[in-house]
View 1 (cartoon, rainbow, N blue to C red):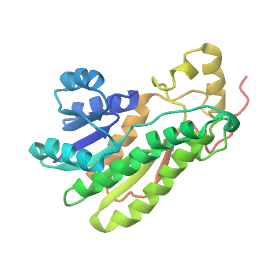
View 2 (view 1 turned 90 degrees about the vertical axis):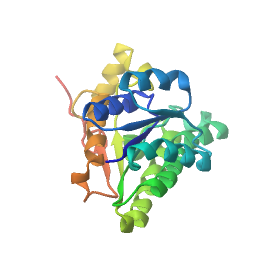
View 3 (view 1 turned 60 degrees about the horizontal axis):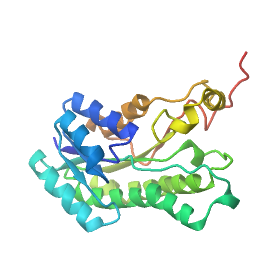
Length: 245
């Protein structure tokens, strides 16, 4: 059994996933941009970590390969890096747009490209993240919607390209989840209430709900699933919210 690589592990969902996997007896490699955030989690979980530049594919591959070798290679890749920009189109600069693409789509491309080279026989699982905003028109989401829609297209094409090597590629598409990245939305009671009303189930998501599905997609017994985008969004992208009493 090889190692699971989690990119962006210092984010709320990545941390929840790492704790979940280690609790189930799995080995993980924690990837991020700064040791300041990675080191305490690595110490807590007694797992290796590496500070990486997601835009340097050669160095990224070397780092993952070296760290994964003692654990028997790479079995799964999760890219939980990302950002969010809620801004109207007319007020979004080209630099801001490109930054959102880099943080969400380009990192997914890099992790997919590198990960597909490292996954050992008999294949493995790669999980990327999109957003409900890529599947339903929402105001002020132009940049993030474009980036996350790109992740879906990237994953489907890669799933087709890599199927012959038994490498599965799937996407999770969350609604609003209670993370540090979205704190300014849910921290204020009025803003949280408005967000809850957008979801058919009347509440926002929790990180553990997303981590649970990632763990499931990584499991070898679920190896007949690829090219899928799975919504974990309280119905946001598919179900109209009903008026609540």
